Image (cartoon, rainbow, N blue to C red):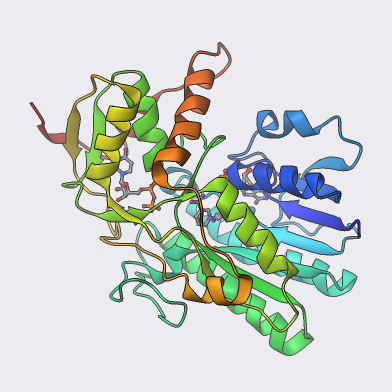
Length: 335
Ligand code: NAD
Ligand code: UDP
């Protein structure tokens, strides 16, 4: 059945893939985005589709549309972008959630929140299960994002209990793939861009911190499956790839795959940077029958191809040196 679906943050990295997939499934998609970190380039290929509509809109303000489902993805996701204007980041998560939940209440739409593994903070439990309450600093530089997302989860469950709304909360772990913003400082895009340009690869700390990387196509399938579950399934549910790598291993793999002459340089670790992160996806597997199928090497191949194409284009400005001012001086350089 054709549904009218609102995707907030639909011009961003994940949002654009989600819009694309929902259109492929035959739905009528409204993408609402203020283009803070998203871009029209990400959705240009969808613009000719009569079932796709782009609204330039900031979700901290109310939105009046008629829809059956809402995917609430609007929020800057990379540390550089969410720390640029932290007050606006919290407003986007909190006021944005209130506005979108209000819209869901009026239209009786089902609503999914793109939450994050950051709700676990620097976790004391490993791997992270959904019943772990997290270890989050409420007053640090990452708090605008972490606490904003935690408050959004609270609002989702209060609307569920108080107004019987149909809610779904996905806790997304590090995801990568084509259309990541080349300048947003996230580790996969940074390392690929640096490797392709044979520039130094910037490792923060000693590179022993771990992350578990999920390829975007797998993630989008997980979100859609969650939205399609019965109304009694609310989550929160972890969606991510449990294969865990150190940041140094990631750097070495990217250097090898791009045949780069880049060297590793070590910079100081940003404050509150989590030491380990790995999702326990038992719940997603049980309730959604979902697990990731695309492993790091395959996903990196697609992502490297994408960045090779855009870095040779005249229009895109790829400037990894932009991050220097955020992450202080190099402490050592590998031979
Ligand atoms: P992104 O920055 O590419 O996309 C976010 C989009 O939201 C952008 O298009 C941006 O312009 C838009 N936006 C920001 N503030 C807005 C506002 N006030 N009103 C309207 N639009 C606004 O990031 P992404 O990686 O695609 O992340 C999408 C969502 O998934 C975010 O909510 C993020 O917190 C969550 N998430 C992503 C990851 C990941 O690894 N990519 C991990 C955990 C959670
Ligand atoms: N990181 C790094 N070099 C970079 C960018 C990031 O070593 O050029 C590290 C960062 O300190 C963190 C990890 O890679 O430990 C993942 O960072 P990202 O910003 O991608 O995501 P998050 O910290 O939100 O998981």
